[in-house]
Amino acid sequence: MRINVKEAAEMLRTHDNIIILVHSNPDGDTLGCGYALLRALRKAGKKAEVMRPLNTGKKYNYLFDDLGKQDFEPEFVVSVDVADIKLLDTDVREQYGNRINLAIDHHPSNCVECKNLLLEDTAAAACEIIYKLLLELGTELDKKIADCLYTGISTDTGCFRYSNTSAQTYRFAADLVEKGADGAYINRIMFDTKTKSYVILERLVMDTLEMHFGGRCAMTHLTLDMYEKSGSDESETDPLASKTRQIEGVDIGIFVREKTDGTFKISLRTLEPVDASKICGMLGGGGHARAAGCQVEGTLAEVKAKIISAITEYLGQ
Image 1 (cartoon, rainbow, N blue to C red):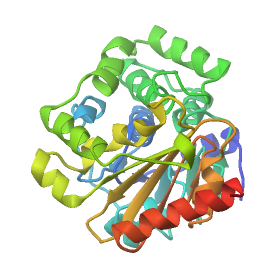
Image 2 (cartoon, helix red, strand yellow):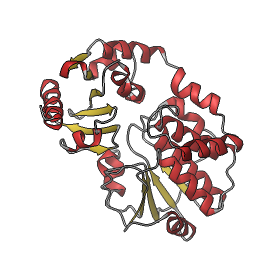
Image 3 (cartoon, rainbow, N blue to C red):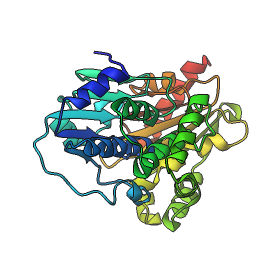
């Protein structure tokens, strides 16, 4: 059932012992949502915990490193920034995938089976929805909560560079800075600071660059052996998805990443008028118009051929 912010706030007021689910290979938006909501719930005297994936990048530690663990029997399950239960870690999906009471998301392609869905697909980040939800709950937005929300908004807008950035986005971010969010620190950690292992990994990935459709499309890939060669891991791959779209003349950027289960995750980043969600939808995925993804089985060559075929069909070539 679709609900609004006011109805979602009332649900959270009347429930306790709340488990919050974030997607695997977590980014700043899903983690920002999860920990902002957790902190607000605990301030209200409720017990809450985030099911944080093991591969959470160390750069996000400031979101939760002061929080202790609470033990309780879960009574209410909330997912944040999760468009599909397939995006949850396997053990989390098996335990809670069919028990989601409230899903909060901004992806138009959301297909989570849940009792209640708070979906605002015009929001630049799911943290914008959480921001409004916490105001509805009457939560005092302290520095820690502001840092969480600012992180999600900044990362999902590419530090306010992407076309999803709206006037509302700037207003929310300004309020969060006034509430104590350290925007300079967060932006530096998220966008300007790179580990040595990431730099090596990026070089290996960019060496795989392929150009298609007369230069309109650029594709790179990452294989499991590249982690070993670079000393990096899955938690550092997020920035690689947008690298190909930065090339002049490219309006379709593709990043193909091998996963440990033998499948490949495809991340698509596009410029107008190309709709990334429609292309990924052809392969069973989804997302936003400018950023979408899907998971495809096959060899690396087969997977790359499938995405090129989908783009060819989309472009009508």
